Every structure is written in structure tokens, then in C-alpha cells.
Image (cartoon, rainbow, N blue to C red; front, side):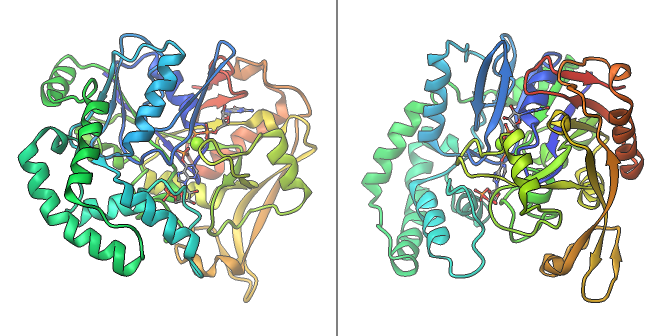
Length: 427
Ligand code: GDP
Ligand code: IMO
Ligand code: MG
């Protein structure tokens, strides 16, 4: 048995789905453990491109169970849309299951998220407006609906009697938004129950027991990335869940001792969508070049991603708090035409010259920090067709080995293109 977690080690969009899809070949159960349809996960195989938001990126294989775990938040209409898109592509969804304990994103959650983003005078987060923050807020406040409530008229009715007066007061008085009657919400829930019916996994306890007893391989798919983690990321410019390796345990029903490896996916550079500090951000033509060559535009919102050089200060921090045991480095091929490649090894405070080699968690000082770079020579060769580590150009190997040295963490996978096949297993 080998249970692996795939997490993003930066600010999301590192290529987690490609790595999940790849590792899913040898897994029996794939669990998405946090986040919602804020995620946009791309898998490319046999010339076809698939984009997932909630459904685990292992769904392309037959005979695997893909569970949307208890730690996720689910926007029903979006889930339905995603399911229908996959059906149109003739993807077999017989292995798709949804935890009855997952939390439902209700219309008021997306409305409040949109309102907060559109009306923020200060402190705009740049969210995906998919209701993520408001849904997790209500989950923690114990006033959210779970998938299982859709099938229990008593629970649903009693919960709505508690939730709706509170919500309506908040919607009307704080946000000036539309309120909801109980009948309206019950109607919505009737439709949601139909959407999820084929997939709800009421026997999840028996299923997990069986998988554990038979020592089946489990793959946990993280969304977002460590620097967007609500505890460890660039708070408040974060998402509202725990993308770190530890999130796999709370979001799935597997305990921490059942996790053997945590693979931290990182790009050979850094991107970020939305607001928030980004010390190595390149706002010049170099940033544009990386965006163009790397096609850095969001899967979920289409927004251009902010681009910058590899930040080993945050990555070292991610390895620590993410519990990362090895790194999957993606998009190294984007540097094929570059003469020089930079790695940020420290931050320097412009005010007093203070050097930081450990990540400073007070993000309000990040505007005073500038990156200290180590410059590596480029390899100036197309590496996208290479499949063996020993066949890589010397400068590419030097670059990867330098990263391993700085991060004190091995690189286990190098991705040299979007396709499943464009991968080098290093160890
Ligand atoms: P995720 O959210 O972490 O799953 O990543 P996204 O799907 O949002 O973004 C990653 C993008 O990079 C997708 O378009 C992938 O197809 C693409 N990609 C993944 N790995 C590589 C790689 O090694 N090289 C190149 N050029 N593209 C890659
Ligand atoms: P994947 O799984 C990149 C960012 C948003 C915003 C912040 C909060 O594809 O890597 P939210 O809607 O979650 O409340 O937004 O988090 N964000 C992502 N950035 N990739 C993602 O997912 C993201 N999911 C959320 O841009 O800055
Ligand atoms: Mg993405």
C-alpha cells in the first residue's frame, strides 16, 4: 500500500491535475479533499484536454473510485455542469462518488462572495466568486447544509428554520441582497437532491474500511496551494480551506498515519491569480514572456496570471508546513529559450537591508521586500521530448540539482509539457 497526497506548493495552478492524473494510474481510490469549484485542473492526454473543477482528476481511468471528499464545498449547479460536460465527452462516471458530509454552496454564498468582491474599497482578495469563503464560514459557524441533509426532510426543515432567519437578516441588513423563503429553498434542495442522487456515497464508511483492509492505494488530490492555505498562506489573501498535506486527513476520512508521501507540485517559476503579496513578481516584459510561453491564464476565471521567478524562500516554507516529502517540478520546458534563469534565495528589506532566508509570515511587510537572486545558465534546448533524466542537458540538470540543494527536498518528477507522457521520473 502506498498512499500519496498531491498538493500545490505555490499559489495554485502548479500542474497538480497533470501529476494527479499520472499517479492515478497506480491508485484505486482518488479523493479530492478540500476546496470547491474555485479550482481549475487541466489534464491533457491523447491530444484531448479535460478541465476539472470538483471532480477528481483521476476520473479518466476506468475502474477507479473518485470521491469528492467531506472537506470540499460543492456548488450544485456547477457540479451538474461538470458532470454533463464529461458525459458529452463519453467519460465513464460510474466510479464518481460524493461524500454525504460535503458542504453545499447555496446561492446566498455566491451572492455574498460576489458582493464582497465588487464592493470592497480596501482589502479586495480577488476571489473566484464561487462562494468559497462564505460557504466555509457557515460550515464553521455550524449553519451550513451538508449533502446528506438533502435526503432527510426532517434535518433539512429543522436546519432551515435555524439558518434562514439568520441568513435573511444578514442578506437584507448587511448586504442589501435578496432574501429567501423556506419554500424557495426547499424547491432548490429538491433539485439538488436529484443532481447528486446517482453519486452520493452513503456507504462511505464500509467503502473506506474495505479499501483500508485490502491495502488499496489511495491518492489524495489537493486544490489551490500551500501559499493559499487559510492557516499558513499569505493571509488574508488566501482561500478558506487547508490545501496543505494535513488537509488530506481532515478532508477524506483517512488518518495522518495512513499517508506515506506528500508530493508538492511547483512550477519552475511562480504564478498567482488574484490579489496579495508576491515578492518575485515580474511586472516587466520578462513577466509577459513567461505568461505567453507558459499560457498563464486561469482555467476557472480566464484571468491572466501574475508571473515571477522561482521563489525558494516560500518554497522552503511550503516544504515545511505542507509536509512535502518530494517535489514534482512542472513547466521547466517554458525556460527552453531562456539564456538565464533566476532563483530567489532570500528577501532583502529595502528599509534596513535585513535579509530573510526564512519566510516572513507578516505579509504586510512584503511590499518592502525585494528578491535576492541566484542566476543559473539556461539550457537553450527543447526538453519537451526528453523522458529520461540522464538525457537532459547539463544546465537543466544543474538547475534541478541546485533547487534540490536549496530546498533540501528531492525532486521526484519533472514535467516537460502538459501531456501525460511528457514526464520524467527522477528517482
Ligand atoms: P492545477 O490547478 O495545479 O491542476 O494547474 P492548472 O491546470 O490550473 O494549470 C496548469 C497548466 O499548465 C495547464 O494548462 C496544464 O496543461 C499545463 N501544464 C502542466 N504541466 C506542464 C508542463 O510541464 N509544461 C507545460 N508547458 N505545461 C504544463
Ligand atoms: P487550483 O486548484 C489559483 C485564489 C483566488 C484568490 C484566492 C481566494 O486550480 O490551483 P477563493 O475563490 O478560493 O475564495 O479565492 O485564491 N484561488 C486560486 N488561485 N488556483 C486555484 O485553484 C485557486 N483557487 C482559488 O484567485 O486569490
Ligand atoms: Mg488551476
